[in-house]
Length: 286
Image 1 (cartoon, rainbow, N blue to C red):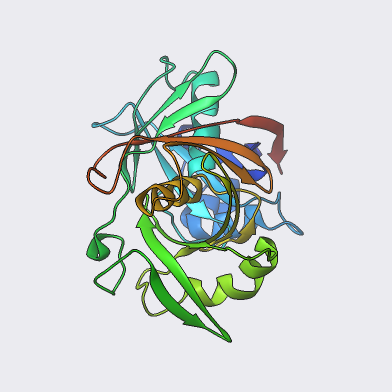
Image 2 (tube, rainbow, N blue to C red):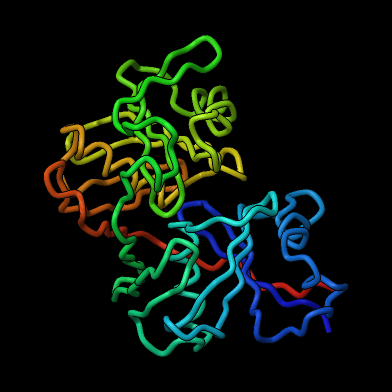
C-alpha cells in the first residue's frame, strides 16, 4: 500500500499531512523509522512533494483532544507553527479525528486551542507570549530593543517566544523587507544570543492596525507566512507602543488577523490568530 498524504496551505505556508494512526512503523519504505529524514524527503521541492513542514496527527494523548508531531523541512522539530496549526485543525476535524469545532491540541509549546469558524477560517488561541529571556531562550537579560550586530549592520530588535523563539525588527526606512530577511535572516537565526536559534521577522508599520512582515524561519528559510511570527510581532509592537491590540498582518502569502489585549503592564494575556486554511491536493506515494 502506498503512503497517502494531504497537502495544505495557510497564507502560502504549505504542509504535508500524514495520518499517523493508519500506518504501522516500518511500512512505506521504512518512512517511520526516522521521521526527521521523512520530513526532509517529503518536503523536498525537487525530489519530494515540497512543503515548509511535515505534520502528523497523534490521537494517543491523554491531556488534550489530540496531539501532533511537527517537523520543519530540514528535519528539525518545531515547538509550534501558527499556519500549520490552522491547517491541522481543519484536517483533523474534516477527517473526524475530532468531533468538536473547538478543541485542544498538545504541542511542544503546550496546549493550543483552535476553533473552526462559520466563515471557513480558523481562529486559534495561541496562548501567551513568553517574554522572560531565559524562557525564550535569549541570553541577554533584556528582550526589548536589543541591538544586534550582523555583518555590516546593527539592528534593534525584540525577542519574543510563542513557544518558539522570534526576533522582531521594526524597519523605519523604506527598505525592502524580503531582501533584508534573505540577507540577514540566516545570520541572526544562528546568533549566539539564541541558544536554540531563532525565527527572524522584519516588520514595516503601515498604521496602528496594519503591518507588513517578512520572515526567515528557523529550519526553513524564507517562507510565505509565519503565524507565530505574526503573533510575536504584534506583541512586540504593542509592548513598544507602536500598535493597537487588533492588527492585520500582511504576509507574502496573505493576511492573518491578530488580537491581543495585553500591555506592558499586563502582558500575561492570550493572543488570538485568525486566518485561512486550504486544501491543495491528496496524493498516494508508491
